[in-house]
Length: 396
Image 1 (cartoon, rainbow, N blue to C red):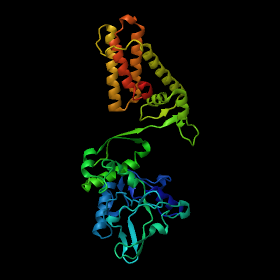
Image 2 (image 1 turned 45 degrees about the horizontal axis):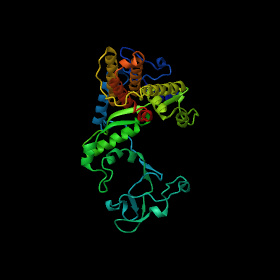
Image 3 (image 1 turned 90 degrees about the vertical axis):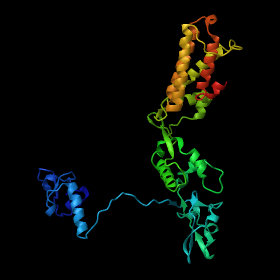
Image 4 (image 1 turned 45 degrees about the vertical axis):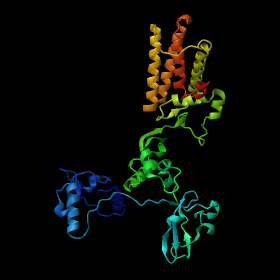
């Protein structure tokens, strides 16, 4: 009466249904259930000495009764399952185990590690079994008795390697140990992890599991692998995920050949925050291209006037001070947006505002009255903050 699957089974096979939980202050009948099991809270009925107890109290009392009569015992279930890490694939770390008829299961001695994959394997020839099931690989001798033996031909799933690669990066040339503890302690944990949302469960959980095990074994001080996480969004086209299977991809080569690589980079970073999905827009690409041309025209309009001019930001007139404020405000915002928040789109937006401020300064003042040292300094710094987003035009 209190589990839908049991209820449907009893109804199908005409088995008696007994109400043992009823809402407090109400009497529940099978007819009143109307085909739906009652799985809510309430008090016990039709339960002998346990009548009148709440569900929570009943669980404890019934458990105690079963223990006292030797009919059962309490146990906490964590819903953990065995973790299958073996695969019938060529590409993976070989499991270092040898099978001997006399000695049984024997680990490969440490001096013979690592077990290397054979130079060649034919996955098609295996017909569902391991590609390593070839005599050249699996035939060996037992390290204990010296008799004929066979290697394990399963390999470990590739996540076994990808779950701790960052620790190996701390000392990639060590040939005596998997990683040097002192160097891992110096570099770990990783300051910033950037990856797709598909990694947000399994890979990150595996990496965390491995790191915590190594921490408990006193192999590394860090007990968390990554300090910060950024999961970037997808690129969408016409409302759907951009993918080759859907045939809605935009070729980077076409964008680059028509607009240049800087335009492609600038649009992707400007169109949306990195953690959000990006809707591809041909008009947006065109807009970024026009902006970069605007920057180019601004620089070229001063190209013959700044040689020999010393850079400084000494503001004299009101217009100078407004430009100087726009410059420093942009420098601070771009720095904070990149280093602290990964808000590349708002960083680019502030660069566009600085370009507008420079055009306003140039177009609303006689050339003879313009502060050329301030302009030169502003243009130099404009190129510096633009360079991460559009490196080619900034370098030029």
